[in-house]
Length: 565
View (cartoon, rainbow, N blue to C red):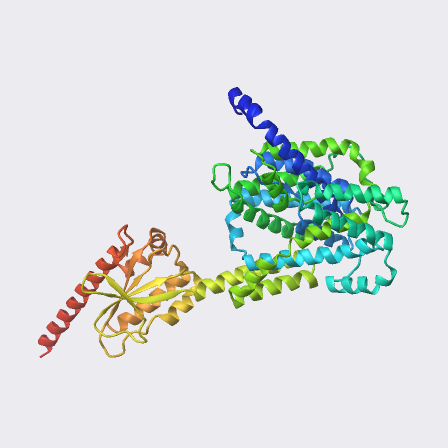
């Protein structure tokens, strides 16, 4: 609890700033939340409940000061896929249970400090997924934009084909309202009213339909009731959990991925980076609260956070005020929301979805490498042909596969040759070890199990000319060896010893040394030269030891030869 002088200083200097930022966030968030509810297949009121409850709880519990937590395009698209899959019975109840389950998963991830795991999902995969989600939203909203607003079935391409076949039955008034919504938003976003663009577009389109008396235009209230008032406490139905568990895990992963990326992008007021684990914990609490108070799954929203920052927010209270403003609006908003044309909301969603398809990101992922291009394309196509929750799993699997493949293939070995002035020169690795010499190999890359086979391929075979060699493996910066690596080193050492040679480890980290000690493998590898603060100091000591060992072996052979003669 801050002391009174600090509170008074905030009220005097920054409260108005946060209030204005909160008002801007509410103005931008209300139409977004209603549109996202339409994507999810539930009443717009539940999206509004979410940006009251989840936004306020997250503002008070996450580490990030400026990040706004609310429903996002991709999250609600997965929610809507449950409805397409045929879960119409008590669908809102399923959604609330889903939101609570997502919160519990995120809370567990945050408490387990698993936030850093989301760094392993590649940018190419996320680009493909987000672009596919954007295209999917556009395809799904075309029927509502042109009329009649019939939810299609099957994958995205079949729904697109169904819409094209029905173009002969489009409703002119509905299409005019939808296109007007798109045009107004695009034009207003180029003016000082850009933060109010979506809200003003909905107001203008609603007024047009009402004043013109266009009866053929479907209104939101004709499909979904929007009662005035604040959200009520609802208890989850455990019977829904088996059916929605797979979807909940996918949403929790996606929400955590989006939020982790946003945490890294948006600095704290002092320029530092927020704690990704605390952000996960806070978002888990926000979704738990959202599920208990009729909310949709939520996560860090890039667009809402951008509005918060551009409106000049000073601290986390801006998001609290934003939620409170929406709560005040909810008390009188119901009748107005029911008068909003569905095609106007569809136009708003199409504009929002186009921002997800970024040509610059697509071009970069395409040009980086074949692996990046393939991952992006596969993830993108999966969003169009499979349920979106499966696309999340496909994306995560592809990212891990890319990481394993890239890390293993990036393992490099270079020979280090000491020069006359005491420095080291890099040379290529010979195909075969020279006899009776000390050879230093520097290993660059992660020595986890998938990379060991490449290490085996790169290391030269022991000499076959009868002369022993001392091989020094320089492992500086490697923190992991594992049972696969230790087993390989043992086998390679035996091959060297069979030819009268020796294996020596240099610049060994404390973590690797502890692994060798715990497994009891350190004894046969002694001496092991630990990493030192001075670069190459450990390698020089190992090199000196190897030369002494070779001289000793040579002396012993001479003695044995003299005795034998």
